Amino acid sequence: MRRFLDNAIESYSWNRAVNCVRLYSGRFLDYKRCPSVHEVSIAASIAEGVCEEASKQGVDHVDAVHVRIGAMAGVVKDSLSFAWDVVVADTLLAGSRLQIEEIPLTVYCPACETERTPTSPAILVCPVCQAPTPRILSGREMQVVGMEVSVAVPHR
Ligand SMILES: [Zn+2]
Image (cartoon, rainbow, N blue to C red; front, side, top):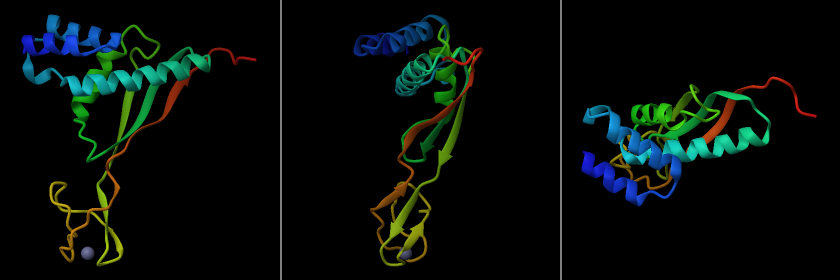
């Protein structure tokens, strides 16, 4: 694991992600608790964008960040939450909550001419008529919806 993390450090250019990964390699030896580098880098890029926006708006502290993540986005929710806490330490997002809304997978069935939810994300077929449903309507998104903030004095 340690070796894996060291390799990951080399492949990352963004500072905060690097710091985060270093922290993990130093502190956590429990493999299961360690989020994958994938989630760490996603958490880092969300945090970067939110920090930038919050600074622009003169926000003192961000209390929560709301994101929407599709079932097909390839993100492990628990890993992302865990990575978030570490990634935001020492930023104006420190201690903030990452509120994750999971978006279910929905597809369009051309035979039924309606929206369906496949039984398995691995097999994109209509659960009613079994027709192939390659057109995904939702479930791939990864969006920052908004943030809850503390503002001491409104900027004029
Ligand atoms: Zn159908």
